[in-house]
Length: 226
Image 1: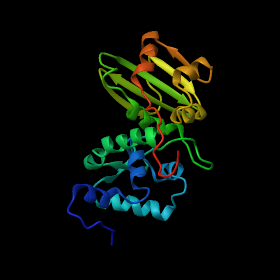
Image 2: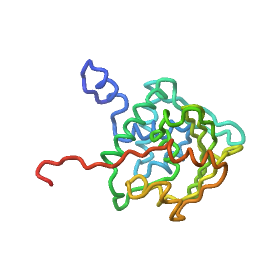
Image 3: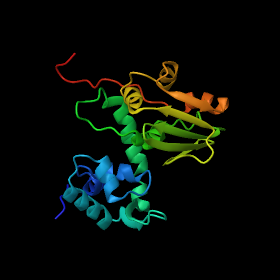
């Protein structure tokens, strides 16, 4: 029997569905498109096969995830969010923005990091107001990861894989993204230091610096410290 807070409260009911450990990270990964079981195993290191299967069954049973078949040439079984699952997106992005400001800090020893997580990070850092009137396709190459972002008049769509006709291409590595998330550098500084390369349409590149804003990290007040 699933654990429950046993409260007639919308927050409690939501946490009954997605509050178990690893569950929201499965939703996080699915927000960028369907995933195979092996994709979760690669992204969620530390999550055992049995528990992963149980979490997916729970989400499927509760109508947040459904089984799908990837299109050709893959044609393999995968998982995708339902309409209800996809509507968790704004909540996950809000948690990501809060975490960038209040929870990230320095990378701890042994912590996994995947450049592909930036696919969702771009959405979390997107400044819709700054992107009004802009239409540009950006391709990001981070180590072995390739993903793209289509910005159209204050909206953004990010996906794994290369862009068909990118207006600008950005190349860097995982360490630069880690330093940006920790507040040690900015994209502009990384380009200046030649830790990142940016090429393409000057207007699209110029807009890039203003439409993605990483929250400034801040220290949480801890009783008896400081």
